[in-house]
Image 1: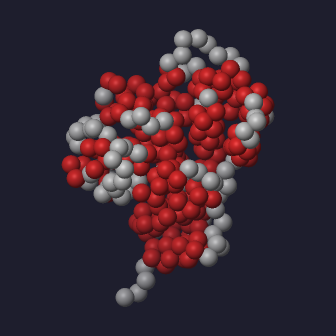
Image 2: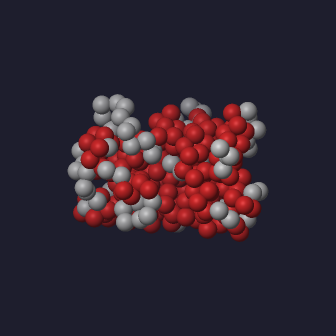
Image 3: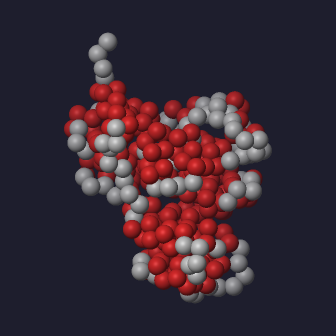
Length: 281
């Protein structure tokens, strides 16, 4: 049987990954500098704020987060240092990474611009649902769940980058969909490992479409993103829209009915809208 275009491209990508020939995307500089500063045990809140302050837009957005209903504060914060203090260092790290993530989805060619924007929009939807579910139904960190939602499809980036070099793949949407569906999991794992993300988020990139996933007794970030991803596909023509939720362990681990739509729930709907607003800038 002859090899299809999708099979050939996928095999080449995975071979390049295995042999360290695949150029993986890098995190924006400000995220790396903030992470380096936070990795210094002696760093003060003031020093962390000074690093973040080199990016005016990021500074404004973090102050916005600190004053948002998500943190349920009772006073206004108007300085970056106060915002970082309010959020704490772990949340600050996660929020900085989340806020700069949109830069990763900027197209370098018109041919992939629409695809990249669609991936980003889907990712923000999953991120917002993940934040709300982690907040309402688990003891997991909501902003970490949000970051997991934002990066769950990060493996699509090198596929779309490669597609820019293969006109026949760009012209064949079904073939491109096939490559993304089969390849974005292992490629996403490689990218997040390359970025030194925590293992629980690396697993999100690799396992979020594994509907039989069932690890620890309690829910983890993979469970949250599995359910959030399925929720985001309600009413679409995506293959996951027809999945039988009653057979998916993640729903039971979150204590959710398999026919619930969290976007419509009073306790989660407002939070989802708030997170989407923050991610939109």
